[in-house]
Length: 172
Image 1 (cartoon, rainbow, N blue to C red):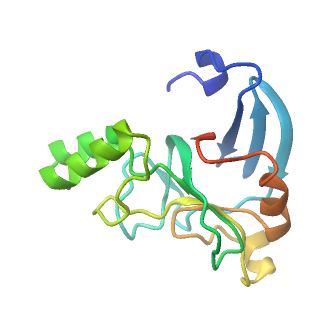
Image 2: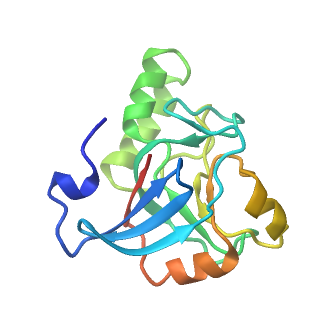
């Protein structure tokens, strides 16, 4: 596996998010120092994957950035990730899972650090969000998302103090 973001020369003042899917934690990192740990997160109901596809209910592993933060969300707050990324798009193109036009659209978005297309066979609308009006008991007992990272509404409100568009996120 690639080196963690902190080991790749991330500035000691750079804030980034480390999502540990096995420990069910999201950690706010500042360089290589943990600033805040959010426990008992939920992920996709069918676990994680390196090769996410639309509708598989799995959380993609890898490195992303927060690409957009909408004003309103049915999940209380939503931090949209830069998914699908160019590496996944290149593999999917080689495997015949996306078209050349879809690859080009993802490539252009990646090069200009914009939100990638969210409507390809690779899926989209992957992010970090709250539970919204959902049942907190379900959140505490099960991985329930369609592939996102979910925190409680209170946790995501606290997380908002640390993040902005462009914040790096590593999901492992």
